[in-house]
Length: 224
Image (tube, rainbow, N blue to C red; front, side, top):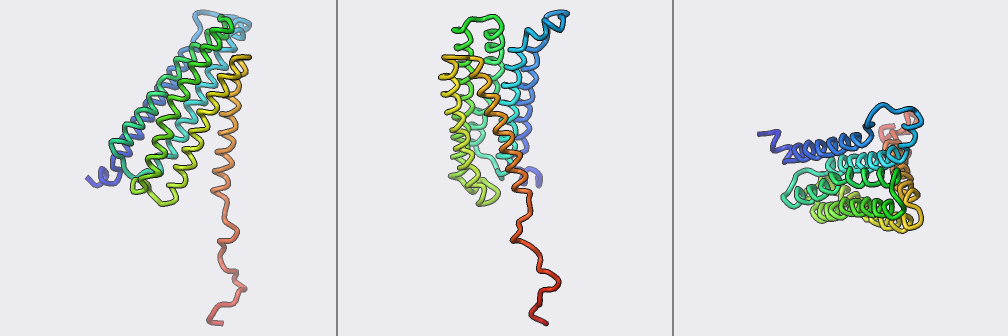
């Protein structure tokens, strides 16, 4: 009873979400399976499949990183939070679909097929981002669900990041009109930039505050 009271549904929410994202990542690998024995040259001919896999893998990986950090700031769940989380997982579960479309289109399709595949990828990105923006804003407006008051600012900041994904999706569609491959590379560049930003953010947070230091031994005290 004590554990249930302490977790308030967060443990089950984390476990369920992690399981869904893990399954989605596993499904991505299925598109890499060869149909039979292949020479090195034949394997290299499938480079669009590998590129699409990387874009999808990093997309799911970033979702997991953000989701993990967000739930670490939540103290308890509500029905609204659970529904919004399901909306997020709905979008994440769709990622293998455009990944397969992109792989096939870049390997065998024409420009129209490649553009259509990138549009589907952008739509899926929007389906992921919209419920996430709603989730961030919902938590920001309900600080009683968060661990500390400072988590409200984090939720508002993350809502802006989530909205920024929508901008990337729109830009990728525009780029795909001219070069679907460049649009796919755009997602990889954005993913790499995000991961680097997260690493620097973690290092900055872990760095000691130079102003918060212990008094030097040589400094006089009131008793001296």
